[in-house]
Image 1 (cartoon, rainbow, N blue to C red):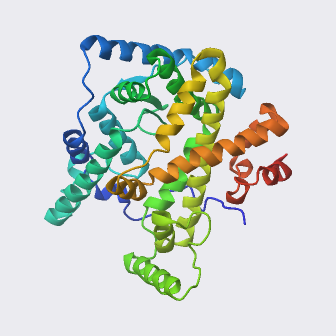
Image 2 (cartoon, rainbow, N blue to C red):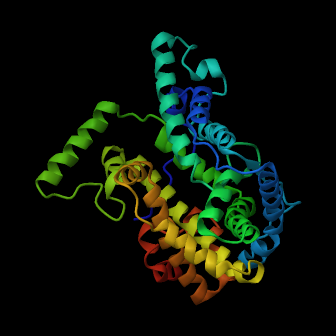
Amino acid sequence: MRVRLVSTEPRGGPTVGGAVDWQFAADIGGRLARPAPPATDYTRNQAIDELAAASTAAEPPVRDVTRLSTDGPVPDARIVDRPEWIRAATESMRVMTGGSGDADSASGAKAGAGLKGFVTGRVTGAQTGAVLAFVSSGILGQYDPFGVPGGVLLLVYPNVIAVERQLRVKPADFRLWVCLHEVTHRVQFTANPWLADYMSGALGVLTREGEEDFAGAIGRLGTLVRDRRNGVDGPSSGPNSAGILGVMRAIQSEPQRKALDQLLVLGTLLEGHADHVMDAVGPAVVPSVATIRRRFEERRNRKQSPVQRVLRALLGIDAKMSQYTRGKAFVDQVVGRVGMDRFNAIWTSQDTLPLPEEIDDPQQWIDRVL
């Protein structure tokens, strides 16, 4: 069954973003963020300068390998620390979820929300800030198509310094290697502007309250528990049924499940494509790429403490790691069979994106699209 976007137009009713005090989320996240690794001013300034230069230098080889063309000069990346990334992430999330840019409105002080809305906004803001604080110590870079007009590439220099020390790799090579991946995301979105609208439409379905109320969602969750107890597969069965994704799918409406599938498949494609390009470009411009890749994969697969495993599951980090692996295997196989020029048919429209079942069987996508 083709998974299509039900509607890209905003629907009436409140959004998830309207229930969050985003300013408070940014403030709390900044306070809770772990301190950056110790470094001299020279090391910090060198990392900032090299990352800025690498984000520009990575663009031509990425364009050459992807065969995707973008117009205009290469935009500058923003080199940020952890609190700055948290602030940028909250702004992006606010835009994605339909939250207000007015701090008073976001906290529920307007539109008759009163004290209850204010408290709700602060509570959800604190929760959001705490999650972003946890994530902020691990993210190396991110292309954000939503936070500012035209999108922006963010590179978190304290985390780059921390990981290159942990891996014991050449800093200049590692910084360029990181930029190859993140710049690929920038090229993906700038060469295919429709991708941002497609993501925004799916996110709108997920975050906007539908006709069914919260009681309906709880009822579906109860049905899931009862069916699982009786050995019956419900709507959350399938490749995305494990862990938190399974619970999410169980309590979502059918349009929301379809939108979630869209985002999961698109994320898998984007991450896998970026990893493929990073490896394809790497040997030509990053001399120690083989060592970096091996040690980075070992770091991805290392054992975590029980607390870390729970947090990673709740935040979907392990699902993100699966996206890299499955997505790269898909892109590797398709490009290996038909070449990059024919692979690029995938960016034509939402109808040429892979279906969920095609990610693990690339020949199905080749047969359907090419």
